[in-house]
Length: 140
Image 1 (cartoon, rainbow, N blue to C red):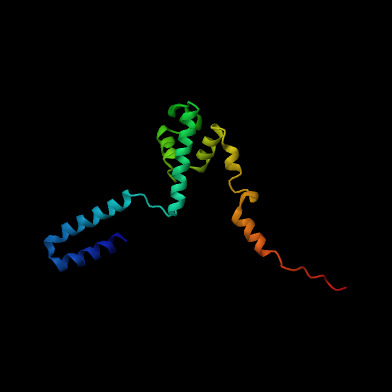
Image 2 (tube, one colour; image 1 turned 45 degrees about the vertical axis):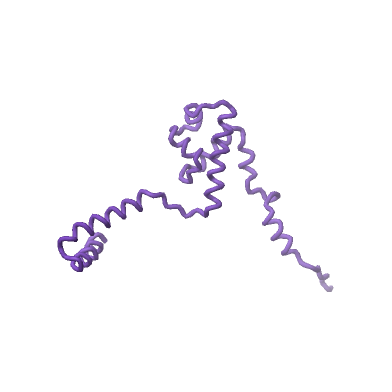
């Protein structure tokens, strides 16, 4: 694939002259580096916001309990950098780390009930719509 890309760049360079080939190659490489350095996320914006709020709430709960970041990270068996990423709402932090943090802060029951059928308003309303309007008695 690299040769194919280089062939495309050489074609462009011929249009601008051989002296500009190095400049075009450099600009292309820099653009690729910039794209790779930025986080690529496929999360919807509301989900990103919810994750950031969850991280802030976990950080607040930790501070209210007087747990230092070094102690919390040690309890989670992660680095302080990972804890900071969790508290910033970084979606690449493992789900197990999030649940363990909730357990340490005694908030794990909330996570256990996060998608409970009884609190799923959309699911309940969809079930209600699917109920038949009438129930026909079978003839015997």
